[in-house]
Length: 163
Image (tube, rainbow, N blue to C red):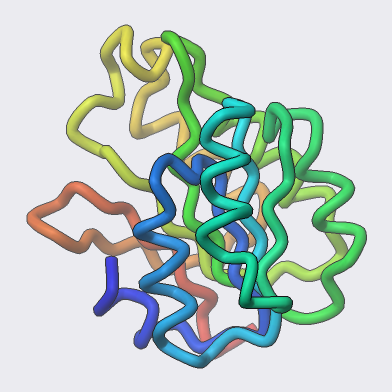
């Protein structure tokens, strides 16, 4: 994850699924983002994350289900963001809902990274297929360039320079 953040220098970093905060820390360490948001559903992980990042005022940890709380984060965004979509909890995967919220945002040139590609099409991700992700991304921006990083485990949707 650390190397990926250097490729996508947007103003904002927004992740779904804080877990232990390692991806958020990697994004923070790049120094590229003026504001970083992490949405986490597990209150214990939220508390741990808030303690870990207490000395970083540019980091905001939002507690809740990303399928419901992402719109409030997006309302604070006025420039392209780098999204790290890695939210899944007890067999629930909100990625299609997250992509729908991103589609409803007025900016269409966000960079979107989706983790754990190896488990799409399985019960781990509610049997969401890679084709479903690509269709949802195309609804946001039909000119997205799709690539894969880290041995194909991370899908990257990058805005085309021709928009």
